[in-house]
Length: 264
Image (cartoon, rainbow, N blue to C red; front, side, top):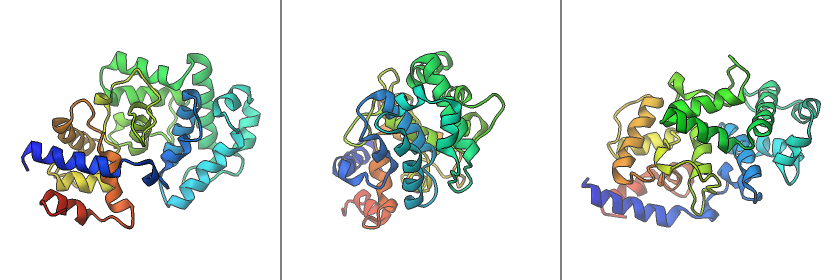
């Protein structure tokens, strides 16, 4: 499809579907009750890290971590001892994520914000030094996890995974519209990669941005590059809207294809 025609379709989809009322049950909703960036970035990292599996289980698991922290996750972690964080995490299980992994994540977040002031500062510094998002995001994970440790919550992009949940977190933090809170100011939206899940992978293939069957980092880069040609200042702009096709029961990918064909 000719680029201007495709952009017009994508902009139509964006305007129609990038609505906060369509966000539920997307885990981005866990950021909305908080008003301070220092709380939103912590809530966002917890919510995005657990955003895999059945929707209802995701909502239950995220709530079980955030609710005990009260109105301010940042204040809770600043006050909490490791023993207190351990008590919060006791008995936690989300599919293959263990109590030890959520504990390590929260302890890592506590250490990073106490030493650096915010998660944003660590990510911004990493991007300035590395110059590109994959290396910077890997350094961000390195800062949060004990040296040499791996976690189902925070895989490192440098190992070749699409790291959908980490790039979803970064989309929430960097972009600002009716859905994405955009609480970070020092990172350009142009640096983002698409949070590649099965829905975006399918859309990317329909648009001809990739032919690859594997949903890995290389595929995420190819699809991001396709959107970059359409919207270089914000290649992840259309992610939320496009993935409603297939996620929502009342919206099928066939509707999007019909729009591309001029029938929607």
